[in-house]
Amino acid sequence: MTRILVILGLAIAVVAQHVDARAAPVRLKDLVNFDGVRGNDLVGYGLVVGLNGTGDGIRNAPFTEETMSNILERLGVNVTGEKFRPKNVAAVFVTGTLPPFARAGSRIDVTVSTIGDAKSLRGGTLILTPLNGADGQIYAVAQGPVIAGGAVAQGKAASITMGVPTAGVIPSGARVEREIKFDFTGMRKMRLALRNPDFTTAFKIEQAINNQFRRKVALMRDGGTVEIDLRKAVGLNAAHLISRIENIRVEPEQKARVVIDQRSGTIVLGEDVRISRVAVSQGNLTLRVRERPVVVQPNPFAQGQTITVPRSDVSLTKEKGTGLAQVDGETSLSQLIQGLNALGVSPNDLIDILKSIKAAGALHAEFVLQ
Image 1 (cartoon, rainbow, N blue to C red):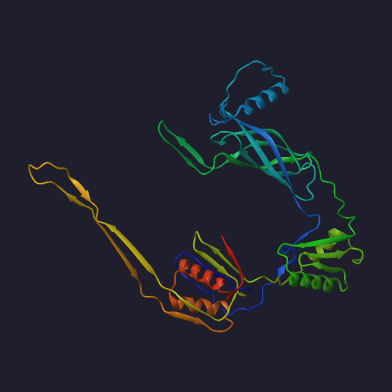
Image 2 (image 1 turned 90 degrees about the vertical axis):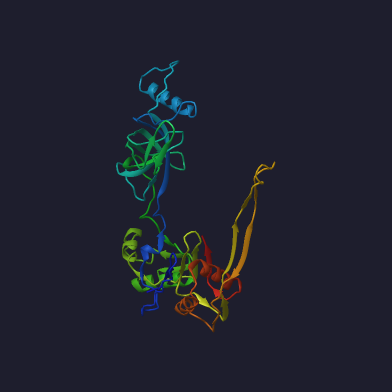
């Protein structure tokens, strides 16, 4: 099992359990994407009606009135030349994902987001909205009540908003009307795309698949692709092949990586992180500036003004450091953390130390700052 160290807040936690140094086996379905098994993004423009006075303002969103007029005319209501100012209508974008192998009649979830100045979608209903794919074709139609989170409270002089009431979801709110044509069973070759490309992991996947079929049906093309020749998998089509190999377990290889979130002071280090011979010294420098203004008044019955004379005390203090810590030879993660704990450093100081060690060329890992 891979050991991961996580440092949060002002405490340094060390994971030092006696576990197997090898990575835990992972199912193939969690490591790769199968060729042809993918979703497709959908988007549409529509209207949400039934809002309690929290819809678009016509002056700031004139397209809402125009769209509403077009819909009413298609329904047989003539509003030409009429002036109406509905406050319970909002123009929205509707987005969703058409999952792989979705069939006509099945339902998918959609997300509804305002594009005007509407204040809330709570209580609204999305009217019939076609959802288009990247090719401009309509693949689904969405309609239904919007579930919006958050709340808005407003008075005469102030208002408060909690959450995001201008976006919501419609569970199973769209019905698939068009299927994506893809001859999955007629494939002759299939590619497995690694989600985290790595040559060693790709080679292990190739060996695991060939051992499963006891013949050479898989071939590693590069660090991110393994190709399977379905013609050599006698009696199996693409669907049967995936069902046989998706639960094969492989021990993936990972790059040594250090991830630092400077906002929260979180540090995550992988077990493979190594530190070469290096010395670390950590201390604090404190600068204090204190203002003590003095008020000076004129003497009694004298002509003058009361003035304030600025007085400042500036002090520079260098606190006693924790000394010099030396790391000898090729050091593992647990040894590094034990040495940093001996220094008594905080996570913020540890971030600066790791940056300096990386700059010195002694930290052998990918350094990721967030």
